[in-house]
Length: 101
Image (tube, rainbow, N blue to C red):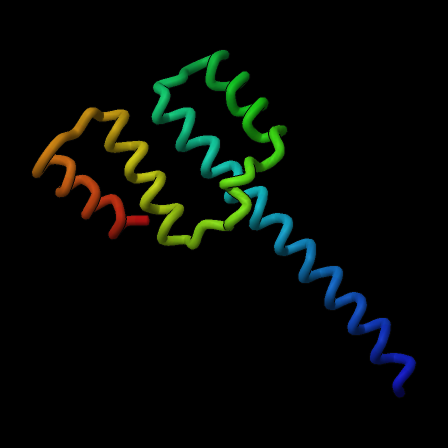
């Protein structure tokens, strides 16, 4: 009975690690996409930027993983910057954006 628990525990740990890696890659994709949008990149420039961004190792200040709320805030903020929104218009946009995602 004890011999069966160890392999099952190892399989569980491996599956957990794979799920974590997928989440990190998704976060990186979201961040790179928001950065490309904020810079207003399109077409081949966007493709090149995304490729470079996704291949890059995380910077020292990106070592801390952002919470889902922080990710939403970053994406909505990038979208608002792209649209050049200011004042009450920006506040309304941010409110709606954060509620949607």
